[in-house]
Image 1 (cartoon, one colour):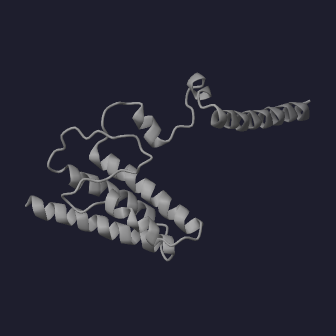
Image 2 (cartoon, helix red, strand yellow):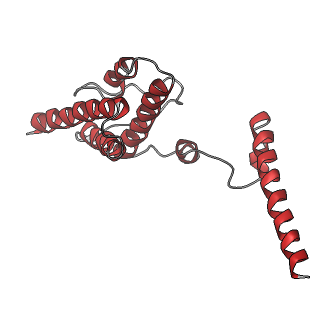
Image 3 (cartoon, one colour):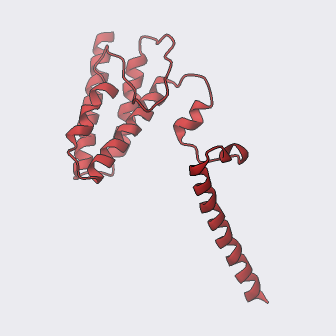
Amino acid sequence: MEEATQQQAARKRRRLSIDGRLLAILGRRNPAIYDIIPQGPLSYLSRVSLNPQPLPPHELGAAIASEFIRNVWLTERFGQDLGVALRDLEDWCPTPPRPPKFPPWWPPIPIPDPHPDWLTDYHLGFAARLAAATAGADGSRFGETLAQALDRSVAAVETALSRAT
């Protein structure tokens, strides 16, 4: 009897995992299915876009750094030159006083009236995310590229702080 109950439970787990995969396939084909089902697979940026308030600059910097890390990882994964990923760094992590250019696949992000330390806060968020990512990537080309980006971001923070004083 107990064995039959365990088999039923195992079948239910298998059925749920198949249903989850089926839902993911349906969701890719018709994203409107997630309107019916709460807690659909939303990325951090998608969840944030549901709230019309602008992101704090450190969160925006961290989100852009995540995009940069993803691009570097994909570039390395596909065996391309990592210098390609570093070319976007000037746009995403600019030297002050230039504002950042956001990735073209992002929706327009309004920056109403930034306070004087906005760019410094942005770079701090960018640098913090890069520092967290470089912790486990030492010794690889991926880690070296992230370390270069981190150095540039820290330099941008130092430049912004020296201009403020």
